Structure formats: C-alpha cells, structure tokens
Length: 315
Ligand code: 8YV
Image (cartoon, rainbow, N blue to C red):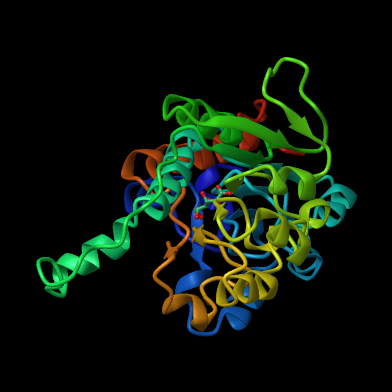
C-alpha cells in the first residue's frame, strides 16, 4: 500500500514543516485539533497504522486495543514513560523515540536552572523591572564554584550536565541503578546519603515505576536548608507534595523545575516563591532540536512502512 493511503494518528504535533511533510506521505489525523477526539478516533480506528505521541500524551492499553491495525508508535521525545510497553509488546507493535539529539539542549536547561537559582537571576530581573534597583540592596546569591552536585541518572543527559558543571569547577557525584565503571565520579547507591553530601541535587533519570517518588521527604530533608533541587527528568520522580512542604518550611533552599507531577498544572504555592524557578517543560524546546526530533519521527515512519530497519527503536 502506498504510504499516502496509510493513516497516522497524531496525538500531538511536530513542528509545522514536519507536519506538512507528514501530510504528503501519510493520511494524517490530528487528534489534538479535534473538538470531539473520541468521535474522531472511532471514525478512523480501523485505519490507523501509526501513532505520533509525546511524553504528555498517554499511549495506554485502552488506546492500543482500540486500534486493531496499529503497527508503530513514534514518540516525539526521548522519555517513553507515557507508553504501555506490556500492551505494545503483546501485539508486536514497534516503538521509537528521539534520543541523543536533545541531550545538549536539555543539559543546558539543567545548568540554566542551577545558575538561575544560585545567582537569583529571575529574582534579579524582577528587581530591576519593578524599580527596586537603587532603593534597596539586591540579596546576594551563592556561588556554584567548588560546591558538590549530585546527579541522579548519569545517562546521556546526566553526563552532558556533569560535563558542563565540571567546567564551572563543581564537584560531581552521582546516583543511579548501578555504578558505571568507566566514570571516575563518586557513586552513591543510597540517594538519601548522596543528598546529605550535596549542595545541589540534579534529576536527569528516566521516569516510570522504578524512579517514582525516589525524591521523597527524607531525601529533601537530607539535602537540607542550603541545598537546591533541579529537575529536568520527570515530575513523577519527586513527591511533589513533599517538595512544596520542604520549600514552604524552608527545609531546602530552593528548586528549579522544568517538569511537574501533573503538567501543565504547577502547585500554586510554588508560584509565589522567589527561590523557585519554574519552566514549562522546555528541555528540548529549541527550533533546531524540535526540527530534528520531527525528522527522526518521520524517518522512523518511512523506514517502518518500507520494511527498512528503524532508526531509533526502543522496543
Ligand atoms: C519532550 C521530553 O519530548 O524528550 C523528552 O522526554 O520530555 C521532551 O523533550 C518535549 O516536551 C516534546 O514533547
């Protein structure tokens, strides 16, 4: 069957140029534009052979079972914790993602958050805008130089963060599933112990059941009143209620967050705090990276339907 007759269900968009390319190659259903997505899904469910998803669009058993001819899920993102792998595996449905290309941009956001917190960048910007400069002293920041940063998850993104922070003369330690023999940085198997020894805790691990709420009240207590938390991983890694409580009660010094437990909802108490920097999940959000991510999604669809090996297969 020519690809132009094959139906791809887009749960979320690629950038416009890649959406335009997609439309020349596949019949494209933009579910995210539909006023009644359930009705739209019913109308095409037997035709859909591919899905485009992202970390914010669940691809759970119910959806997979509703699409009897589904062959491939192409994720616009590296993290795949929104996908039910048990259900895809049972049906032999392929899953692809967009690794590597977003590593540097995401690491840059982690470093931006760490520096913004340390040097009070957002607070200082507001200080100027509201006319406080010259009327009262701007509170001092703290230097990251010589401090210890504990990275949770020293995979591709974690390593890119470490590389950058070494250049800021920070001491790197890490926690993860297992110690990596090729890395000289000290490894902690116990996250609470690592938090106690750190000035900054930076989360760069995968989401999902293995890391669910591993940053809990005890870990935050261990990080302590001078410690900062940075999260560019997944909101699910942190017990968000415990985080709000730790910030309200000044049990940690501050937090820089790109991800949340229930995006796009951000707990209201965080929005009024000077020592918290809040970003709307922009780790990979540059024109260059989002373009190449879209190209990878397209290349995986093309490869799959022309019987070639997938470019970036997860399962
Ligand atoms: C998203 C991300 O892909 O790659 C990931 O896992 O969380 C982000 O880069 C991005 O928000 C696009 O959906």
